[in-house]
Length: 316
Image (cartoon, rainbow, N blue to C red; front, side):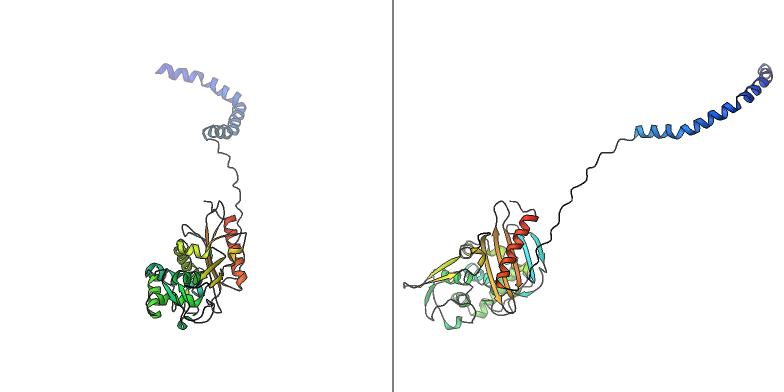
């Protein structure tokens, strides 16, 4: 132990001298290490962190608003699923005019099982004004042709004759109409008579869509509302009556009409519900309520469908 102490004392002058000689060099070395340390540390960390993947910018999706229309409420929906593609005030309750006849026909032919081959004589009580089948009181017509006149020609007297042919009073028939609406969950739909001439027949664009989804998958309705014309023959007579479809889109080469129903009263404005088809695209049901003119109800429904096919994902 004494040896080491002695040895240390002996060498102390040497180290002191060395420390004095190299102090400036030592300070310089320490300063250099201090400057290099952050760079070395950063380099070490950089090697440990994986390179971030290159993220390519996402292409911006062009959002195109639906066309401007005069309709006070409208809905565009997939005709198969009922999924709403776009809408404007879809839950606003409005008078629906002759769109009412979709329910009149449903109740008579499907709920009450009206025999379409039954002969029905036109009666004065069927007349309420508005669009009508131009036949004299007492003229015998098949119930099937009355249905066509009510749907394609929107004849009010034909709709009343259909209700009468079921054997119910008009009030009883209307009760069935409202029961049918309730069964479909149409909480804002209410009927007061079978034709739609009264302003009290009300619904919404969304609920008319539900009526249409049901009606426009029915073969009878499809066959009677997709053709430009329909011919009615008077029973036991050579007389015939030609009815023009009130849905002008059936005569428009730019669209393919699968089914439809028009309506008009001053309270309702011009109304239309129609199912339209396009090759390679899903069928659409377009409902417009309260358009300002007859022609605009058609052009607006067409424009909304074409917009939806172009800017929405609607491939089959």
